[in-house]
Length: 282
Image 1 (tube, rainbow, N blue to C red):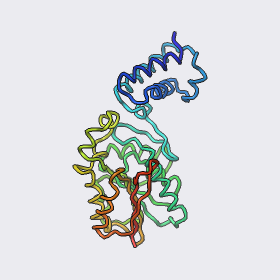
Image 2 (image 1 turned 60 degrees about the horizontal axis):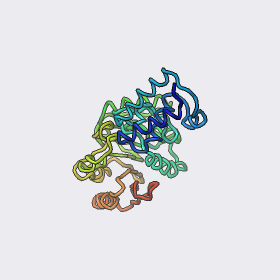
Image 3 (image 1 turned 180 degrees about the vertical axis):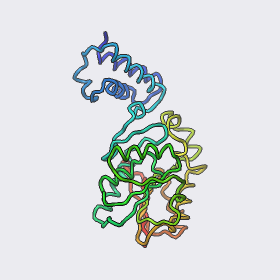
Image 4 (image 1 turned 135 degrees about the vertical axis):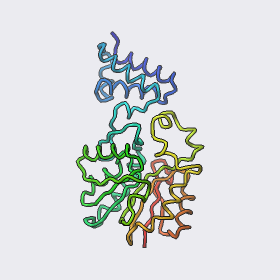
C-alpha cells in the first residue's frame, strides 16, 4: 500500500524526468483527476492509503501525461468563461487570454440593443467564444463557422451541452457567409508562423490541430485575408474583434489600415501584450 503523498512525490519526479514543466503540480492534477476529487483535497489526505484500482487509474493517466498529452485531453472537458466544454485533438484547448477577449466583447455589447443583431464567430473550433457570448447575451444571433467538420462536431456537442442555440457553418473564413452580412465578427484565427510552430511544446505541437495554429510562413496570412474582404460582410457601424500574436500588433494594424480601416485599437492581455485587435466601421 502507498499513500497519496508518496504517489505525488513519485509521480512528480517521473513527470520531471519526462520533461513536463511544473511537474509536481501536473502530478497533483493527474492524481486528483484520477481519484475524482478537487486537487486541494489531496493536501488533507496525504496519509490516505490508495487501493490497487485507484493506483491503476493513476498510472494510466500519468503515462498519458508523461507522453505529453495535455491534462485537458485526459480529462476531456474544460471550463471556459461561463461554459463547460468538451475538447479533443480536433480543436484547440481554449486559453485564458481568450476568456479576456470574451469579457471585453461582453463589456462592449451588454448595453447595445441586440435583438436584431448578428455575430459571426469565424474559426470557432470548440465553440468556446460563440457559446460563452450566447450564454451572456441570449438575444444576440450567433453563427459560428470552421473549416473542419471534426471541429464543428465538437462545437455542436458543446452548444447542446451548454443549452444554447447557435447556427454552425462549414467553410474557410467568409466562404460560408456569401451574400450575408453581420453586425459583429469575432475570430481567434491561426496566427503562428511555420518557424514558430517548430518550437512549440509537444503538448501543443503533437496534440492540437496544426490548421488551427499555423497561418503560414509569416503568421499574418489570415489577417491579410480578413483585411482585404471584411468590408463586404459588415453592416454600417459594425465591430470586429481579433485575437493576435503577442508581437503582431503593428503588422496587423498596417494590414487593416492599408485596406482603409482607421478606426482601430488594441487591448492588452494579462501580460500587458497587445493581444486583441478591435476595429469599427463608420
